[in-house]
Length: 213
Length: 291
Ligand code: HEM
Ligand code: SF4
Ligand code: SF4
Ligand code: SF4
Image 1 (tube, rainbow over the protein chains, first blue to last red):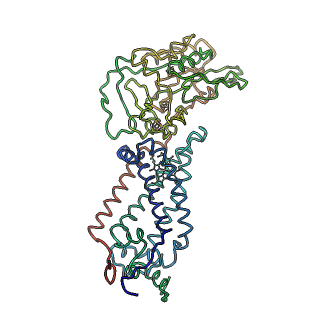
Image 2 (image 1 turned 180 degrees about the horizontal axis):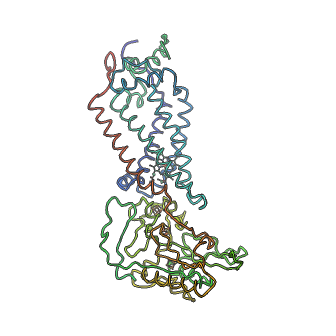
Image 3 (image 1 turned 30 degrees about the horizontal axis):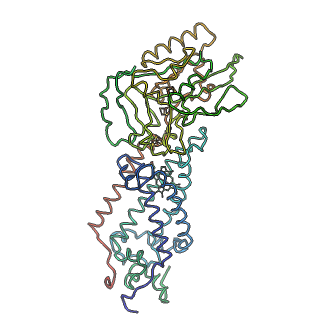
């Protein structure tokens, strides 16, 4: 195999799933942030106007949760955190300073990607539970009104946690790891890319012995 | 009484200072409801739907004097009927005119994210502007009195306007006009407080209602609709009037520290990754990038 032969990293279903998650999440994020702060209310205009943003936000959120379950079916096993991941997390500073040679070899996903995945997965669950309360606040009897305000605060904290993860995720994908955007859009990476960033994953694909997992 | 067009004191969802804030020479207006002289005739309910142009609703018979179960988006004003026995064994029929209290510190307005959907006029009236309402119902979560009601068809929320359209033109609210016993009063907040205190004192001195008092709860900064109650110690007996209403603490946290902490964190995150890129830049692929 030549050095720049394309290796398939994400098949079509995986790419569809990723971008459906991105679209539904981003609609939720921008329409939610519009309501979150008066300084961000202008975002509602881009989302179809504030009443439309309010109307579609929960539906888009529901879509996001369904897509997250679909993604979970495909990726939950690959996202399990392992002993190597814990070693990798200890050396995360080396990853942040681009001294990747100090890190143990990585499988299909590195520990950072896995943690982002779980933040989004559990975040989606929390956002759904609390979002339903916010969708129909009058369905909660006035006696139990505490539930309404608890839901809003948890919804907002969960949203902020996922947004924090997303900032890093988008930054890594667009700027830090050249080739990863191409991977999630067109599905392929080069052999060098695979060997550098996900060596164990590539070795297993190529039928080579895998050092440690 | 309002003198001239209504001026704005606070606006929902405003990023800066509301226009004209603090420029007012308006009097605070106030509606006083003397529960002790209300006979439950419901003339005010009729006047209210009539003035606001809503159809009359079906009444529901529940074996009491209650004709309608609750306030509704097109029913701002409801007489709540309660049978009550005092600790001294006195049996009472309590009629309380329920509706928005026009809080000085309105939880609905604090919670509302849509610019201009709720305004507080400098005379104290809290008014919903349906054309800017986005139907999120945050006001429902913010109100300590269970007042704003959602119209699922138009996705807008409504409540008593204190007849701002009449008051702005120098008229009294429609309910005040209709009351046959004179238990409803309307005037400046100072005058109404004075009247209410005199009436409560009269009740304490000349009747058996030794706990009579004025309901003007401090937890929401006082209200622009006040009650005289036979027993100020037990407002819950009047169909669930809260004893010490406050804007829910979590709503204050949500609309206070959580906003600026979150905004700070998001800004820090974006600045952080930008600085990281300047310092460390992209990762290199061993053996070279090969496109
Ligand atoms: C999972 C299903 C979800 C449901 C059912 C849901 C429901 C809701 C509802 C009903 C509201 C009230 C206002 C509105 O509709 O815009 C809201 C607010 C909000 N949502 Fe969601 N949502 C979901 C997912 C998400 C996601 C994925 C995000 C991503 C960031 C998000 C972020 C927000 C934010 C920031 C707010 C504004 C909170 C505030 O006003 O302070 N939501 N959500
Ligand atoms: S009673 Fe409720 S709806 Fe009326 S001003 Fe107070 S918080 Fe707003
Ligand atoms: S539903 Fe209530 S909180 Fe939401 S925009 Fe309308 S008035 Fe404001
Ligand atoms: S002030 Fe006007 S809107 Fe409010 S209850 Fe009276 S008649 Fe109805």
